[in-house]
Each structure stands twice: as C-alpha cells, then as structure tokens.
Image (tube, rainbow, N blue to C red; front, side, top):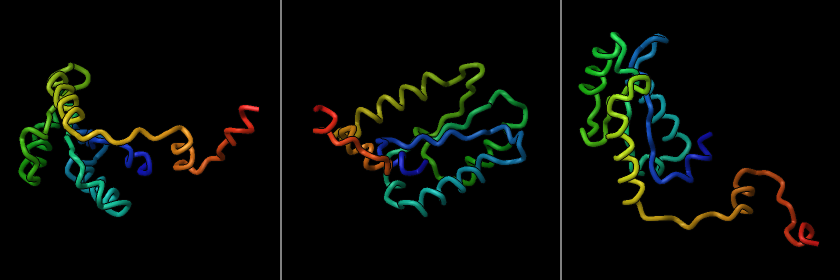
Length: 130
C-alpha cells in the first residue's frame, strides 16, 4: 500500500487510542513511521496530521497522555477524535482541507501513468481506439 502513499499531498496517521487490541497508539505510530522510512524517507517530509481515535473509551485517556508525552507533535497537528460520537471531527476535517489547499498542487498523473506505476498491463491507446 505504500506505493499509493507517494501520490498523497498530506499524510494522516489515524491511530486507535483505545488499546483494545493490546496495542498502543505510540507503538503503532512508531511502526508506521518506521515502515514509511524504510520504504521512502522523503515521504516523512510531507505535511502530516495525527488523529487519535476512540477517545470515547475509558482506556484511551492514559494512552493519549503517554502518546503526547512521548512525541513532539505540535498541538495543531494532533487531533483527539471519536468517530462514533463525532467529537472533534469537524476540527480534523477543517485541518485536512486547510493543509491540502496549502500544499502546492502536483501535476495530476494521467491514467496511463497511474497504470504504469501500479505495474499493470497498459492498453495500447492506438489499438484501443481502432
């Protein structure tokens, strides 16, 4: 899936803050950063937002505190949200829209370029039109 990340203007790290599966948002964040770094370190230079989801669960408060204490993510990049209650979703959406508008637009790849990037067989345009 990382190949598709290269086409994004903004990275959004959506992390489960509940710890329900025995994982923590801090560990998940570090794993994601490591995976991206190993694939293409330049991706980590892109604008990003971090959303800590499931703040409506009892377990999330301590894990969120640990995450904030252990990272240096600016407060305007970090969102504590609940998808189920809708808490703080508007703020996150506003930040996404703002960041996407600020990022310089890239040339939009043609469908042929997209197919080539995905290592799929490309239909010969001329043969297709005949």
